[in-house]
Image (cartoon, rainbow, N blue to C red; front, side, top):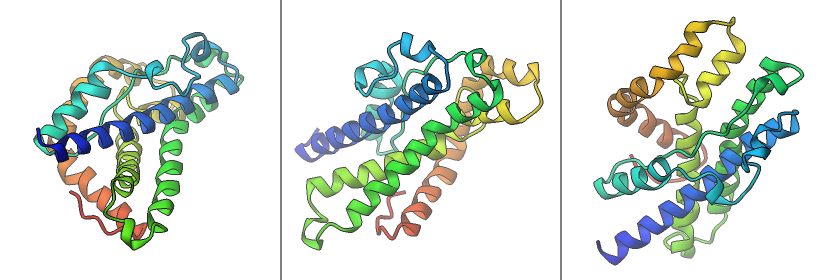
Length: 209
């Protein structure tokens, strides 16, 4: 691995850790704020990345994707919640599920603004690359997590807005098996163009996928 590859890996992984940590923290904080003590008891109302790292989803998968030159994404340990603690079970679950993607949206807008205001001479710097990676990873996490397939946040939104159905809940068992082919077959043709579209809207010139 060349020095450039090492730097790229470190920047991507650092940006991923930050983005996933904020995503999971907001899930945990929202549930805690709405009356569910489960995330706090599990030590998840924390901005310490160690509390949220999944060895496979946060480290191994991004590392392999960087090596093969694919779009980098990953996941953290799901935040445990108990909707029965919410005053309004469905609304509490809906808000908690949306908190993560909304955190990613906030971060990508914030860091896109920082990137756009960097002097032209700094746009090729390591710092600029790091800022851009945070924008891209947060865009990926937001889109990826809104896919309505368990265990992603999009499925929890469906649970909250659709009539109660045991079929939907049973999908939790098979969700990961549905998710893998979706990522393999539709990820490159859906997520990549979606990221480029978001960057274009934000006025960032970086055709990365």
